[in-house]
Amino acid sequence: MVELFGRFMTRRQLASVSGSLSQFAGVRSMVLADGLERGIRMLEFRSGTGLRFTVLVDRAFDIAECTFNEIPIGWHSPTGFRHPGLHDYEGEGGLGWQRSFSGLLVTCGLDHILFNDEAPADHYFSPSRKTIRNFIHGRVSTIPGKLDGYGERWEGDRCILWCEGTVTQAAVFAEHLELQRRIEIEMGTNDIRITDRVTNRGFRRTPHMYCYHINVGYPLLDDGSRYLAPIADVVWASHAGERYRAQGVGYNRLALPGPEFIEQVWQHELAADEAGTTSVALVNDRLALGFAVTTRKEQFPCMYQWQNLQSGQYALGIEPSTNHVLGAAAARQRGEMIMLEGGEYRAYDTVFSILPGAAAIAGAQASIRARARQPDDPYPPLSGNFLPLRQKL
Image (cartoon, rainbow, N blue to C red):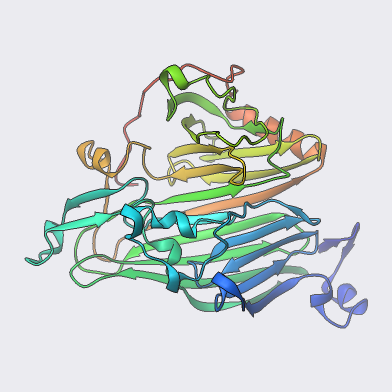
């Protein structure tokens, strides 16, 4: 049965109190019509609990807005949700991606993540293409998708809100990769389920790197907000050395923004439970509200934490990744670059959860601590121990 407004109801009971399901929940299609966003197709989800989020069909089915009871969860940058037709992937020395960077979920890949990189292109067997040049976080997030379907599906007295689509990243004499994405949420719940499948549709071995840039903003991110994670080891920090404590912000408690704050990035080694899942959460005790991300360790073995506490850019990023923060060149050198054969695929199963109330926060914290107890020290020692990653699952 569906739980709505403090009452459990069957499908027929729900129908009896309304002429249309859309009064409570549903998925609807719309097109943005002004400014830099003009022309972008978007799907709006409402689960009936106060959770609302939007999916940008024309930006790789990424999640743009996300609110719970009108409280913003996702981060909006000054760039807005820019139309992909305005995007210049190679612009500004490869930093053009930063002019299209906004929203709760920005997908990074499909063949490259992290920093600028140039690699031999021998595996594509083309005399005209000697190298492949990749820039920050890859191409996929600004590729329009093909909408394969969306709507509401009843399974007995349960209602599933869903959408599904396909994003193709391809070039002649280069990669031909396909992302098939399905997003689901059961009506009356607060768990957004994202199921991705990245397939090499070509006939040449092709590199594959993948990362989710999951961005949380104010007011969930605020002075005193807590970062919870089953951290078995703190591996690396971008601000290591003399700058490690200089800005007065450690990894576990967040602070108010400052005009001269320089972004901080950490890589944590997370512990998984017996089912192979691991979770990270940002919680705001003042609001009694939290947001959690659950992934599978075998799919996303690495986790970064991005702290961008700069005035006007205020965000915290949760970033599950297939590879270490060392980047593509290191992945090749260490034998950790995923190479997909023709027809081969990788699957990714992720859950975004709203934690409404102190009890939900306490439950998530207990679950995380059962996997591993994170360091109490906001500036824990950095091990530099980048564990070997398996190329094949």
